[in-house]
Length: 244
Image 1 (cartoon, helix red, strand yellow):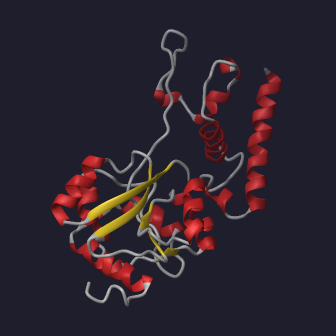
Image 2 (cartoon, one colour; image 1 turned 60 degrees about the horizontal axis):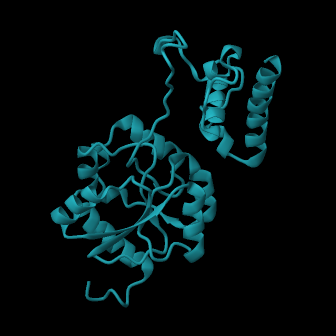
Image 3 (tube, one colour; image 1 turned 180 degrees about the vertical axis):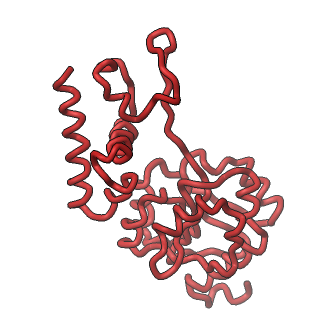
């Protein structure tokens, strides 16, 4: 890039995107099974060059072995800056308004927050091979992250799980639900991560029709909607505790 010094941050980002997609990174990502809940998004004021890629990524979700394979295949050096929460990601981006980073990996359900912050740049979908994604996974991104362009694509996935001691409980996955954790028979016997536990309870209340919430995505619309839904979740939790 001989004119790199004269180019704007936007132009530099576009140049990096061309090199990035020309080497079929999305195809490689799908091949190694890294698709779903969180995904890469362009930083609005990134300072990319054709030879390096600066990524804000979740801790341990961009293994060194993957980076090495990518660099060996493309010649592009990857510099990663890890973060452990979406809040930390936002703080890092706001500190420099995105300067110094090319891609980041926000959770897909944080779209309203990132739309408000205006630190991301839409992808040039004409240069992307979106047909390499599972349609249902891609839809999760396009439904939530499209306003004046597409700002998110699936990249890595995570999941929640439930486990139990078979000598203490006679359970089967076919009959289990997120609501089961809050059943009186398991009072003071269950261990949960607070965020996952409350989210799971909300998903259960949504699935049973008690608190419709579009699989909890409505909690990200605005503060009033979040309070309305989580008040119901916390009330259910409180009633369960009082019965015990």
